[in-house]
Image (cartoon, rainbow, N blue to C red; front, side, top):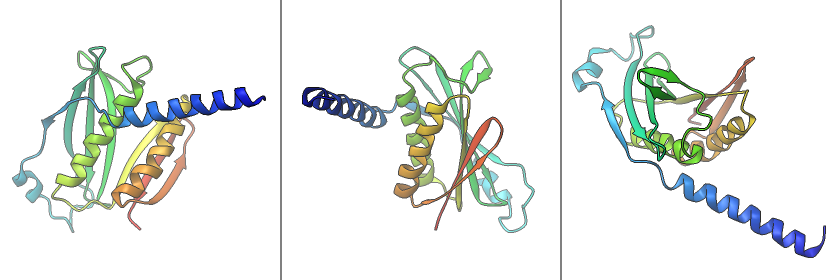
Length: 176
């Protein structure tokens, strides 16, 4: 590769990295659709509710294409974990594969923004953060892996464990 080609490649990589950074710093405006009342949280005895149904918080946002994305955060007292999931909402039908939906980096940035907000405002102990990526989309798996490292370290959940299943990779971020 000649010197001109090398500097051109450098600029393309810089432009792409800059694009990703900017996209991650510009989440969509989101809203809280449902949050449990404090009395709902008090109902559970932290030490005894190892098999309790998870408590769920719901959020949503609309992409620049007009697509509605829903985000849920499920909390389990048994292991003090949250599981973050998001999907495209088409009239009450939910699709987790968001291919060709809005700007994928801004969508992901918005999910991250919601997770950061949740961690800052939650009045419950959180030891683990869980999420998964479909192996059908290797770019998404790579993005989630980068997210796990970056977000995990920033949020104090720097220990990363992955589990490979036939269709998914599950990530678990924990303190320590």
